[in-house]
Image (tube, rainbow, N blue to C red; front, side, top):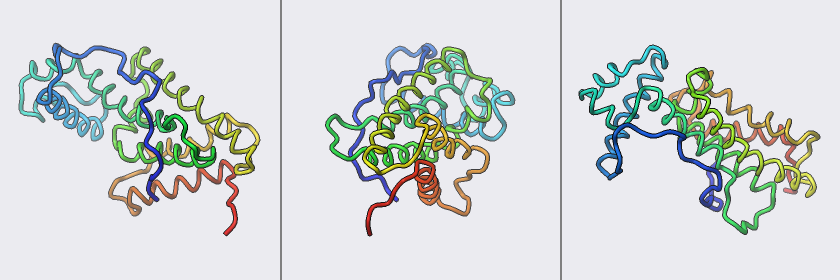
Length: 223
């Protein structure tokens, strides 16, 4: 079940990580590649042994570089962890930022947006699951920025749900409770999802999307 609808426009929510980076001042293609190299090495270590058990020294050894090399791009281990976590948060919570004038019915936007969120969660494995596994790691500033990003999503979702209900396409009672219940399904992925599991990533997305439709009371039309 692919996503074939309109591409989202640039979100109106702030999507920059609320902190600075190491000593780097100007980004180039080369420096971006080095940052990605550091992030990927750190993601593997965080996923395998957790935040507390991962040290900057281990990240340095995994990269076969010096500590100053890593500190040029990142202030500390926490910044690396938050950077890895922020990317999936942005992709998930801007999933309903469709182009201005998108003519589709509300129910189609709801289905598309939730599927985008689920797909982003799966695609960003394992980093999308870090906040569920180790919520105590994040700074208050990061958590506040993430909260605003989540509000950005639900401020779009809830009116669409109510419009789709008025159109007769969805059947539910409490809007916010229904929205939270439907979106709790991908949240539990962190406890069981494996990329090499019995279901392929696309199959996982399709199954969770169908379950979300049931929570929302989707009414199938005709045929």
